[in-house]
Length: 527
Image 1 (spheres, helix red, strand yellow):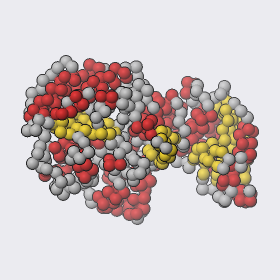
Image 2 (cartoon, helix red, strand yellow):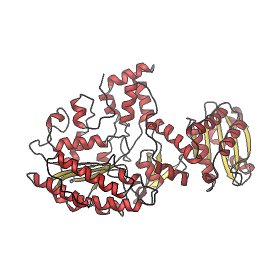
Image 3 (cartoon, helix red, strand yellow):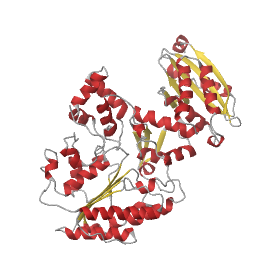
Image 4 (cartoon, helix red, strand yellow):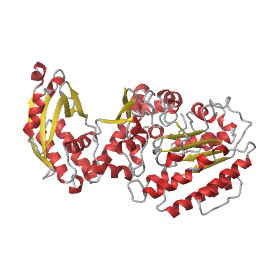
């Protein structure tokens, strides 16, 4: 049985304690060797091993060969050379004020000086203190260079998104990190990680020398585990998981893929599995939602409240997917960068590439959509889940009037300020997340040969075709469903097809009326 850790991010501790390490050193060598440059940046969602990668590079440049025995990089690396390493871990740095941010920066720099056995030359300006440390470490090295590793570079800023002081914090980070470029000649290697990639007009305006491998094929599987890596490194744990759940080993791995796979960081790359969620699943021998153990960031909830998204159909241009301005955050970009959405496919038109995004797996879908329901309704998850289950059960029981009644009760509890930007998409999105959050197979904006169906609910015995209208009669919605023959797409399904037209009232902020018609399976086949 493999020894698995989900809470150790220090490479030396992981190796010395005998925990399973999925070897990523071949991909790290591609950066560290200098073949493709010497200053790199990669953004990845939380819980994907960024801190472990930074710690691995730290041990590598410090020349700790014993930790790399048997790993891919060992025979390739020149172990006769060592460099002093400045490791700036910003993971716990989310200060409420600028003086506290400056204090935290100086504390980190002072601790690193102590670790490297050099005096700390403090200054009231953190940027000057930073420059002093880089220069002093470089002077300590035989070749006059040092190694700079910055983990969670954006953590000080993320807590201030959507807040009035965001510009002040953005400018402070921009000035502090400008040292990376101005003292580039003193650095043998630099590696910066974080969750977000800000635009080149912002923090990165002074860091245009960085090699951004965030969406580079060479780093597509550096974070997260491929299928082959999981099967190779955890066979005993997979077998134990299978036995505990009455499955074959193949069946257990299939469930792992369904729950925790699906993250794609390059359009042509294979998807990867979330390493922390996988580790917890194998430790506990239980398929569960481990992503929800860490709450959705408040800045994402604020963005979702301000603008509903149609999560069944999300497209975005490549330029917008990669970065954003801190003072003008883009919801879809943030959802992608934080791991709630991933690449499904793309379309190339001349020099423009447009991506289609999706929720990556069952775990994210369950945790995320529960939070979205709360964000859209202003209600606690335990309260909204009751309405969601009632609506879902009604559809499984083929009780459409009860389904509509459950939705009406649900909407009645939504505060006024949550529905002050009404349009059909908002109502459609709320219904979608209400059903999808409890696992109902629902799809939005389903294409037919004569348009798009607002919503299709596909259950074992039933298919519901739903069209929404705002301040227009439900009869108009029904006429559209029938006039465009939406049911024809499902004529061979051998399922009962039910047409549902729903009209929302902007004044009442709930369902005003509905129209329901049923097409028996035999009629559907004949149609």
